[in-house]
Image (cartoon, rainbow, N blue to C red):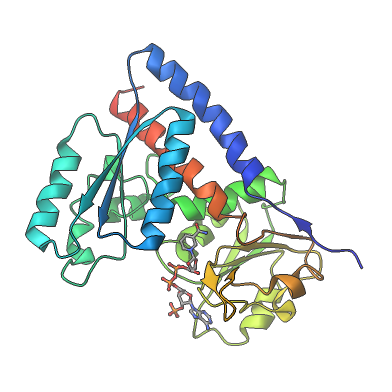
Length: 286
Ligand code: NAP
């Protein structure tokens, strides 16, 4: 039996980073060093793991990075003051704010505070609107961009293909579907109320799974020979990191599939760095 080709994230991230290193060298020759600021409330293991990846990637491509760590019990007013200070810091070009927040912080208010031109992971409604309008000056969420970058790197045909996205969050599902639509795929979004979700998914030349349910997409969801991008990060009953797709079943049906870990997650920080550099160039009228 022919198993699916494994679409690893690392070569994609390495290729993106290579280009970024050159861009940063050119900026440094002009006396400009792009800078990322990470705003973290508390110290959740997930945030810390992503932060380590983002700091490592920043170092690799030559951009500066700093972390503003805020106490878990910070008040809404104090948080807004801190975020405004980062907005106003001229040395900072891109801001990543970790979410979800503790319950005393109101995301619906705070998302209007982050400066849209520094909002490199699509927290601001301005960037969400730009995503919908195909306005290239905006910043789409890094994970959703990573989905499309992987497909492009492995030369999966997008134009005219049927792309089915499982999940409709503003972080992954909706933006991934919109970015695939931008590439002239026919995008379908499935969610918790979708009827015959396996049947709809099976129609996808491309299946993007982003629902946060371990091994949810079984072989019945997969089109024979299709491309499967598994965004999910879950811990199964045995404590293993697994995706939203049942990998062992899917690799027997799909033509290509991303692993978890080592797939989408490995590309995200390179997109983050790319966005910081783009923000820096825009802020310097380059
Ligand atoms: P989320 O905000 O919880 O959204 C989950 C979405 O999945 C919702 O739209 C929900 O539908 C849908 N859903 C949930 N259960 C479903 C079911 N049984 N059938 C159909 N649809 C269902 O999650 P998220 O933030 O988008 O994250 C999704 C996954 O990606 C998680 O596993 C997360 O850990 C992972 N993730 C990965 C990366 C990475 O870099 N690889 C980054 C961020 C997140 P409704 O809207 O109808 O409720």
